[in-house]
Figure 1: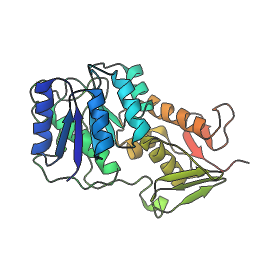
Figure 2 (figure 1 turned 120 degrees about the vertical axis):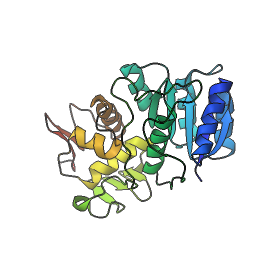
Figure 3 (figure 1 turned 90 degrees about the horizontal axis):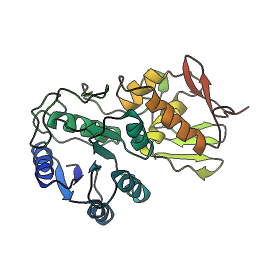
Length: 272
């Protein structure tokens, strides 16, 4: 049974989140503020965190960065701001996905389930898990989808591993490209013998490119196969690629591993 920590200061919304998650088979813990959430994460590991950004004691972005400093637990952030720049900042700060308030219970379960599937968790058998359009719960009225192109999508039933498919071979085998070694099974990446500190999404992106090294991969394919969100803006990929480049010690103007093929996509290659 996957465990979820809900960090939400509004008592009625917090209780509603707990009820809908419990109904769908999740073990739920909760905290009413940012520092309480940090204590929960450090004291007892959880499988995912649902983090509200409007907290009374900590800026939500700061809380997210502090969680990321101590744990790689998947974090789903809830924000009232449907602002693309803000959302990209949150994703770049380590959020695995986001919800724009108001959101439905169905959207919460669908997005949380997608995040957990990407990390290899077996999902609980709850009522209507991952089905868009479930009625909203108190404090978060039901809507057919988030605004700005981030609505509920259909969620695939099978777990996804980056690079899965006939062309990629064994998706868990370590791949070495130049001095870069990526091990999808152990979820580690090393460059010249030094381990790279990657967020969960950065690793998924790098692992997919490594398993398809030498091939040009379109941003649309990355959104479909890594994000599982084909309608999210391409800029989301650009943000994560920019962060990956920094960690690989390169710039877009002087790439070594990540080559952009203008108008086509990106490919991972060994430096010449």
